[in-house]
Image (cartoon, rainbow, N blue to C red):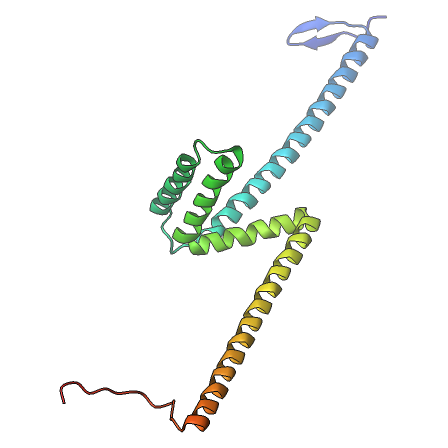
Length: 191
């Protein structure tokens, strides 16, 4: 029942074989579990560090190098706080939206290139994660742009029509009265 004598650190030890096998099995399982946990934690940490590097490099690429951040961030913060002060006793919608509007307006005014880069990045993230929302927004933006273009075209047509009517009226008045309406009127003083 007891196994053979073994000398461990100068001491003769005899133990049952099943006990040695049990502890050998237990050490093997514990070591396997430790290695599995170590591999999993290394995988998680690698994924975390790669995500962190991606985020920090993306944020670093948003900033335009020729724009000073410190004073402009102070201006943006002051504008955001101004929006919060103005909307202090208003309804919930104004209390939440006015600081955002003031802050984004100041951001666009003080850091225009960084703002453009940030909006492009936000659009990219939205398009990647919420394609249905992005396509709906794009169709709304295209509709508004078409409406603006149509209004500009119609106003130009109306302006051209008015100019044409004025010219034809001038010609008619000139033909009936014999006046030359295109000449400038000059007056002399003191003669």
